[in-house]
Length: 193
Image (cartoon, rainbow, N blue to C red; front, side, top):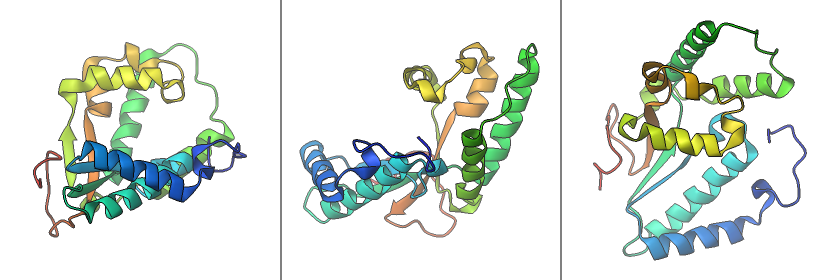
């Protein structure tokens, strides 16, 4: 749900913070990853569960990183402002290509989500890491398809491969810890490890 929706008692955003951080710490201790990824603090577009996931995962990372064998690198997934512009161009091109019936007008939630994407997108210079994921794009599409709210009309299944690659072929991150040197850029998530 969006930030303006009522929150059910059992939703992640209302879970006990210490319990969630403790469970994540246990997982980090068991799996011992070198790198931890989570949403940026704004949850990409303000989704309360994403915002909560970012805060809890970041805190669990900080606690676990202090221990021997703890994780060494933390990344926040983020959308660069230029990525939003490209996303808009690709979506418009695909809509024009599909033709046919006009899309229904955006709902109040759609408009809020669009505003939050714009407000929470990161300046391009803050994005430290751009990972080419085209080699695993089919797995990414299958994962998105399994999350119905991400692919409401299944539209990307019919898109030309080149368009899908432009839209979904890269993942972008801000390296939080260790802090990057000003202007540093990476193309993978294990280069600092």
